[in-house]
Image 1: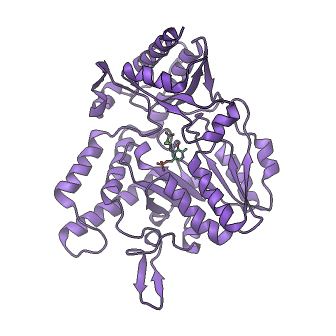
Image 2: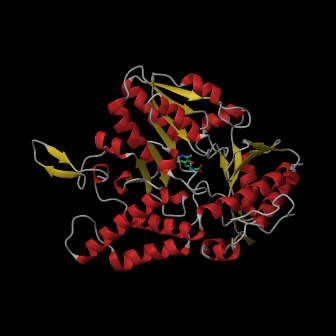
Image 3: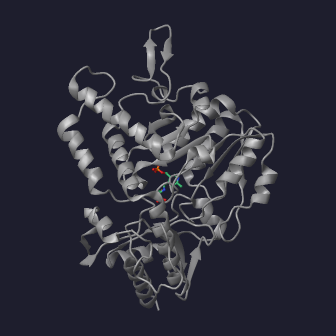
Length: 422
Ligand code: C6P
């Protein structure tokens, strides 16, 4: 992996060695279409990323050849389905470097993963007067479950502030972290700002006073290598649809010491050892936390997405995206009347911006007419909008299949938008 002379290269062609963007784009059939008569430029990857052909193939193969319920059939199809489902768990374990395969719990996505921790760890370990520490740049799914828990228990939510660039105020974090803190739950990469938070430092400090840490990894894991043992986080959450896999599937990683200690989240089939009317004995993790028939196909598709990402390499992806983000940031900074929201020095592939006198929804609508898909709105991060004194932003979010030419098309689209409003 190398980025040679990144700052001297004018544009358009990546200098990340061995990164074959043409071959990669060919893996994503959806990208080769026109929208409103223009080539599709898909820059809404933070909402949901596109699905490569190998993932589509894995889903079709599963439904055509192996489809059945899991963990309960003696017949061949059920055994094949069970094997494929548990094989996906192994892939997730290796990808995130979890110590044990049982530390990978399949859930619907990041939202469900955080609710699971709130209602299991939270209900059993957090009491009246205790404090939960989140940050000022959380997605609603890392705010609302904790507010619900606070209502249920009488605990108190505290918020680590950020500066005008969208960088967390670590001095304030030091002050807020106290013996009252029972959990720190922070976003790894902000969906609204792109900020990469100093999560290792946060974890180290929290652990020094025995406070566990949850990381919302929804926006981090598509862009960088995640090693949960190296991070030493207690809980890590992600969504398959942001990681080039299907919707309705995601993962909660939790250290096994927690999974053994925590009560189940949902009750039902597949999460028990035995049931009688007097008493039920729960299965061990991960099954204790996976009641009912899960999203079997989604899990297998997510496993195929992991295989696909590994075939490219997360380091390659991170290097290519760093270069593309740098190119896009410099290009957007040149546009008069454009203000980037989220200018932290440590950022991943998100470009949130506002234009003088033009509502973000109008920007999104005009760009759509040019075939460019971005998201406009509060991005389920209303407190972030409030912090920056704006109702919404236009957000272009990148993936490794985006190109420098697509950034040029975005810049051209923004300039057209500005002209239309003059
Ligand atoms: N952000 C976005 O456009 P789910 O919906 O459970 O898969 O993911 C929720 C979630 C949690 N945390 C972060 C940091 C997120 O970005 C998201 C989803 C999408 O930014 C949809 S609102």
